[in-house]
Amino acid sequence: MHNATLLLVDDEAEIIKLMQIYLENEGYRLLTAKDGLEALEIINREIIDLMVLDIMMPNMDGIEACIKIRETQKFPIIMLSAKGQELDKITGLSVGADDYVTKPFSPLELVARVKSQLRRTRNYMADLNAKQDEIIIDGLVINSVTHEVSVDDHPVKLTPREFAILELLARNKGQVLSMEQIYAKVWKEQFLESNNTLMVHIRKIREKIEENPRKPQYLKTVWGVGYKLEKGGPSS
Image (cartoon, rainbow, N blue to C red; front, top):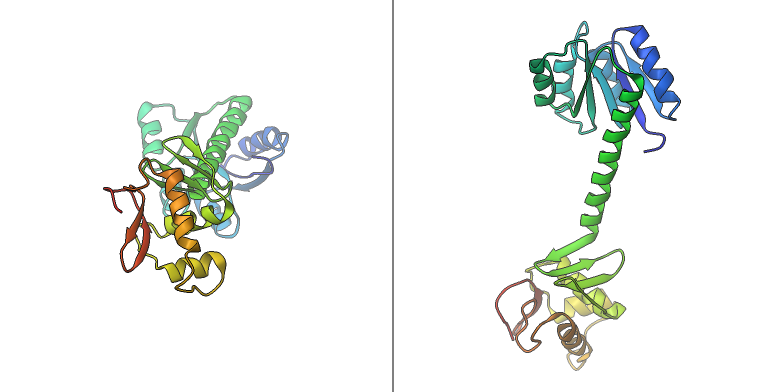
């Protein structure tokens, strides 16, 4: 994560300076605080990508600060402490820390831990964004960005108009949309009763995504109302 902003929180100036030397060399933007209270003030006005947080500090220690931060923030936190007892590590991790480094520490190890946590965050966000781009209804997967469709991992090729209809129904999963609603959204025109264009497209979509188009599992007709998309028993 290039140009990530890191917040270093420690009341020992020498420790802060040591961390700054190695982390600035990696290209990170660094902010510093000498206790938990100052850290909270910085978080309120800055977007933080990762925090290195010492436990033993005046005014507000790292444990209390971590608890407060986790009420609103999800960025990774690496706890830093001279204490090496197992109980301290468990306490730090239980209140929301993502990693724990014991003093005295190797600056290169800290850099590696920072890179690892930022990489995990980046991968998580990438996966989350990918999932938001996808609409999944059982075995039917529709990607609104790539316009790719698959059924049970088998790719399905749809025309742009067919995809627009399918995506519209998928985004309103389980909701019945009238022919007028679908036509107005996809064609941007008023639907005419004599126009069977939509029905033709529905038939073609079923031929591509349904195992048995005559007994559709996904794209259902609700007679006298319209169409809906959901996984369930056969419908005509």
